Length: 163
Image 1 (tube, rainbow, N blue to C red):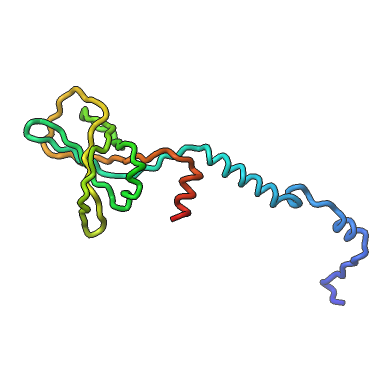
Image 2 (image 1 turned 90 degrees about the vertical axis):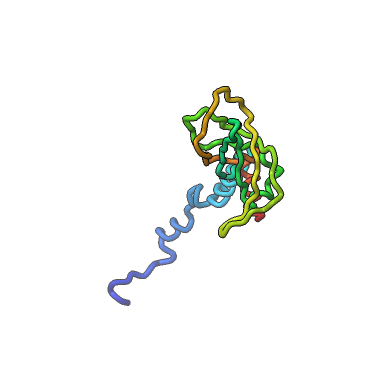
């Protein structure tokens, strides 16, 4: 027998104690504990609300008679969720007294194309009244979002997996 190696005695008292020892709870029932934790997380996520949004640019233009008109370009890829659109909001606060919430008044059927994307133009109508008059030198382009119906985190994840 080589000098650096020791032979393990299978019938020794130390080996029998190690083999006969009951493993700790986490080692013994680890898979069950991990499974229960995952099920609890999925169950809780079914009650956490999530409101998906589509980032858009909102164009504010003014006619000669002082009327403000609001419009946006909705990406063609987002049109499959058209029935779930709830409202449009501005993402960034602005110093002008402009409305921050809109409803989609009309979506034009014409699909416009550029090199990178396709979209449809929608006209927006403010849902809140702003009493102050605004005078624009040129049209504004503001960052906004189209909000979709609330849903649970679980439903949102399942819709992404189904794609």
